[in-house]
Length: 454
Image (cartoon, rainbow, N blue to C red; front, side, top):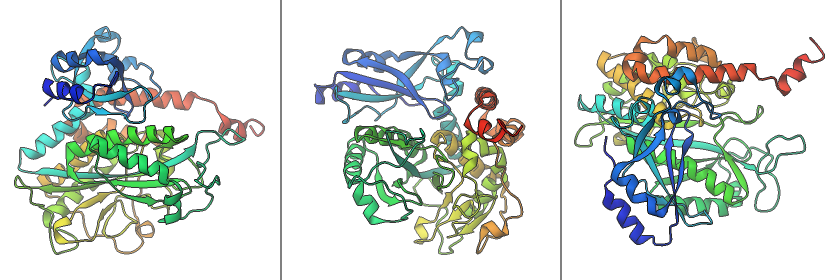
């Protein structure tokens, strides 16, 4: 585990004399940033000796509730655990009224115990290190979709697409529409400027498959660095949208009649010299690529909770919706779960299309790479790629409910070995608690379905 050097903070403060406040944050298993707001004069001490955070901070539900069964509450007296800054994460937040910077921290492997066992970034590092030990260097990138919503709800209290620059509300699906991007140009300009300032390689913007839905791709690179960038990018998108009077959401399925939001993960394996081991003139890639596909397919059900972590995640799985429904793969085919895109031989890679945009990038990447490693070790054959409509040819479907995925991860011997029983113990305790809370809540759908008919 490498943390930032003290000189990084000193240099930053010297170049940014106006900075008054520092947001210190750590990402929990749900992908929620949690932390503290510090004063400028407190920053150097964080780099010198870390910052204490309660053990419970990495064992909370999505709603911020303690989970007693996580082992991070009363069993350890909610002990302080020390977190340290990550190199390169200290950046300005240009949208804040008070001059403010942010720094991302992670639990120290020893001083951060017991919370460090639940740190999602640690899990990804563990999986990456196991691949590197065998000469495999993972390269990844994210494509993240999101909706831009009006900060105000409609007359029925429901979310609605944000107003465009002309004061209208987008109603139609204009996939790849250029006017739609032009209408949000002020937002995009600030977003790209903030990405540049923070060193986040944001590239192509696309108007996606629903009114107000946008996708921006991030450049590929070292797997850990790519996921660090994805985590910070999601925070940045929400903050810039708020500055423009909008709400950005990465919720997997915010509208029942519109497209869901996904996080497509691109993965390849390089050697120590950086050469792509999937590179091939064959559109289906090398035998190593096929083995990686075979491993991801073999572990798909057991990993699904990490790709689709919430009850709402499963509403995204609908036929003919560009959301995958089955453990399938294909070449340049968007109706399958694992797609090998076209392009030059040296760009050959796998596009993993299963994750919802609500997934934690660290955990999703860890599960993907653990599946890749399984395929390489066991030399798994994925079978022939699907040609044509993968929806129509599916013989085995993914589960479309939260509980089935939770149980599959809970009962997986492979996951306990690949991801570690200590991490899974905390994560599954959190997800069990969320499941109970979700199922116990009575809401509008219950009243609409059962109030007068039961």
